[in-house]
Image: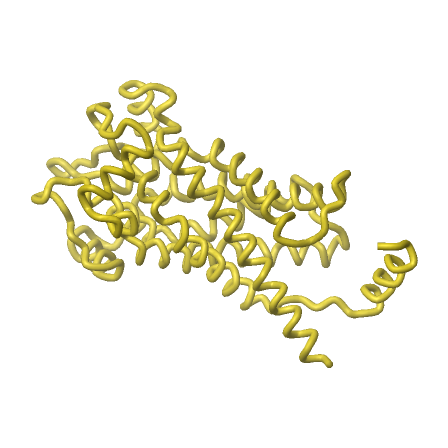
Length: 319
């Protein structure tokens, strides 16, 4: 693009009043983007959950690697076994992702309006922590149902919970174990979400700004969103896996003589270190990143496309 064209474009942007997405739609777009991404990456999430649960208590490895786990699921439960718990996964996105992305978008826009500039790293991290904590608390019941439904197929027939669907799971958990059980593992869930969102949302925002304004001068579009998302997903995977391990095992734990299997997050992490080794804290890294990386990419791409569709619609409406 020539210099006169760039100046003309800048003048047009300055003369056209900036539109903003209504706050309610920010939450709707966030949840919709997360649900769309989940439909694609759910098999990796199930494999990650199965691998994190395997070896609990005994330290015995149930699967050789992620591919062996996936092969085992398909051979024993069929291809649709990889989508076990998809209802709970979608409900989780409808609650957790709606809350976190909607809150982050709201805070991000509020920061730009108040300070008239893009958020710096510290501000992005703080907004990510707040958004993650809010979303995680709202989404914990669906998370509990998801972990249980995804792990049910590996249990002996006599021990399976056999939930019919996510709503049956939530109802039975409430009636059989009490309402508070729906928030079992809420502390590690919120802690994980704070780490995930501090890393994911903040790094995505910063990577996107760097690629757009730095030496590469990348234009707004799917290529930019893809590059920023993949790097953001890698950092998030490394930072959040130990807490994700603790969350998964606490939410799937059973009670023996009225006593829980684990006392809390640090008890889970301590046992894993003693019984399975330090690298077990990142057990399931491949499916976790294969799930989180593409999920991050797809979620942000869907979100950006929904935002762009709204702006295009609003622009046409003004004509």
